[in-house]
Image (tube, rainbow, N blue to C red; front, side, top):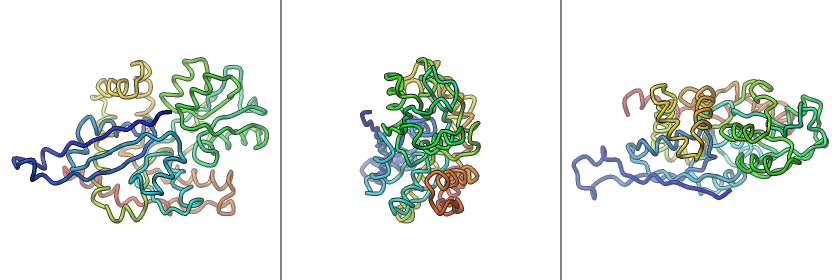
Length: 329
């Protein structure tokens, strides 16, 4: 998948007021890395509606091809903020020794087990190839748990790491030997319309789960507190706009254009997304606890006993962002 980026480099007219442009404060640049998905769509909304610029932010967003590239870039300082499945943040702390902290929630992952049409049950995946982004994080762990619960153990199937959701969908549609993968909208919708089938959602098969979120290096967050609070304020304001019923038609049109979707696919993606997004992008601690328990069970970390989810979260930035919005900032 070719990397794509978009830039939000318009200075805030409200900050400039009647002063000459040369006197306007310099916009604070942020480098953000994200997967292109429904929970990150508020980034598109914030761009379209000028919400970052209104807070004096110049935000450059790069779409990542996979989780390792996102994690490596954040650890190296190429990016300031990452939007991905929050299990990536836990992996950075526990396996790479990078002190990152989760500052924003997102969704329940919205994943479905998508399989080739001849497969009728999870047990039918024994002896098959299943596709993942990276084998030891996030949605790969979801799939491995679902397989294990159906009696399909590691070694009974081939785990193929081929990249992000678009790549996995394309690989499944192109080659029938690629038997299964976890896909979320719009890709799960497109896959089923392309002849594949769903064996159920991760939520129905596993229960509560914290899917997407945003995380930063802890030292960067401390050094750039107000900038991070302003960024989160803009993101939450954008999500509020996105899910408001009165904006549905405009939001679906924007989604169809930005993600290059047929409008009916965009409409279905929007409907599923609105139902799955956490209000104000709050972090679901019960869902995060499930993420940790899954890692403890499947990867054997912490001696099989998951730590408290609060260890990986700093909600003070989000709290400050909500307070700013309440105050009209």
